[in-house]
Image 1 (tube, rainbow, N blue to C red):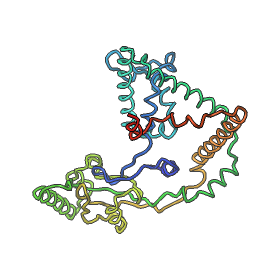
Image 2 (image 1 turned 90 degrees about the vertical axis):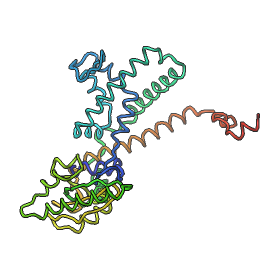
Image 3 (image 1 turned 180 degrees about the horizontal axis):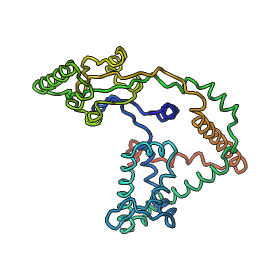
Image 4 (image 1 turned 30 degrees about the vertical axis):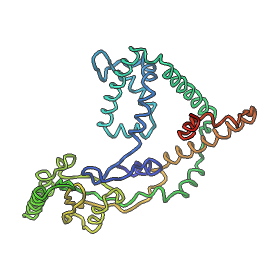
Length: 335
């Protein structure tokens, strides 16, 4: 992952790190949420936009076809960072297409049954339509000028937020992983220990290659074929036990076996990068997007305040509580 990508995540979309499965590094970006929200509302719009465009078929299920232009129209509705994630992750793009097709099938079944005519669905569609109109109109009325922010404003934001742009120290590492669940019995523990001992014995042989031993012994399918290579990992993104072990290694050295909840890790340090603050040129686009978003939000608040000021609403304060359902205890007392 490049430094600019790390900065973008740090500016608000950095996932939380966990101990799931056998990963040393686990990213949880906003990709899944963005796709779920967009898929929930974007099928019909994307289809309509693509009717007269490229008819290349990307996917087909039964009589349902998904054309290139239709998917392009849909992807254009996603946030810029989500689009970048898809471009960098072919597997995620493939999952997106499959999910899109599945939802089209559901849509076909639902419309065939007249589901969209149900009163509660009609009400939801109307609310979604109103929200789309309001949101689109507000954005058009409050968008900052094309020349905002100025070069001076960009520089000021960069200088004031350098700590947020800091790219932490990074380690390029490889691992040999031997699975051992936390609740493993004695036999399984002895088997895992024996396999780890055998892998370490292989590594001590003259001319031994960590990559070859990882391919033969590691049980992490995602990295074993690459000789155990996990790539560049920030120190904050490592499991604490692994981070402590790696921090004390020289380049090219291999750690002692590290026992964590999912099993044994044997980690090799390939290279390191010190913590750095990227130059302004590398994060300029991030700063511009952030400042424009902030200014637009301010403009929207001012626009709404002005609009309401011209036509002050009359609210029946006494009846407000009737909007909410009565608490269960209160309902019981009235019966």
